[in-house]
Amino acid sequence: MTERKDELAANLARVEDRIAAACAAAGRARDEVTLIVVTKTYPASDVRILHGLGVRQVAENRDQDAAPKAAACADLSLSWHFVGQLQTNKVRSVAGYADVVQSVDRTKLVTALSSAADRGGRELGCLIQVALDAESGERGARGGVAPDGIGELADAVAGAPGLRLDGLMTVAPLAGPFAGRQRAAFDRLMEFSSRLRGNHPAANMVSAGMSADLEDAIAAGATHVRVGTAVLGVRPGLG
Image 1: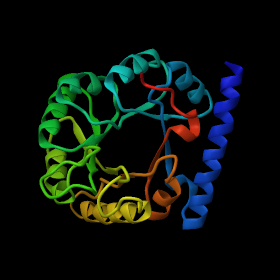
Image 2: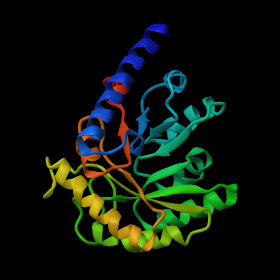
Image 3: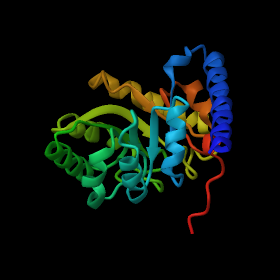
């Protein structure tokens, strides 16, 4: 356990140095960017170590892994983010432990999340996941709503009991006009964020950037970066 703690501490320090350097290069204060550590495929013991090292924001993408992990770490002061594509039959479970759902991409999901949050007496933060590879009316290959659907979906979240509209999220697309152009993709997301804040001023969270491209996201203006591999190491196989 001591060896793993040393490994995670060293990795966290390297990521912190990258975030600090990217903030400095962009003329931003370090406290403008929040690190979310993506702990998917890693055990609750790693989450406990990370908490001891000062991490307070963690993310998961599969309910079957996240629910027992969140339960095992219920005594820790953590904010749990759900970042994966979410099926409506998993909503009740996710609404029981997640503080923020970053992958809201359709009205049916808004309705289900609202019902579950309201029933549980909780308020769930929601990010609209934007698919920069999706045509009008379509969902992206990795989830997300097409850009022209942001406004309608945001209004639905804002008007739903138990939900709070926090902002936008994207994953750098693997296809389409922004493939391989992470900075351009994140710049476009910031344009959408600016528009969204015109109608929903409090929805100022922008979640973008991962281990390989967090510098591009910070340069564009992201408020949150989601980092897994650079902190926890290369993920074990999901056989």
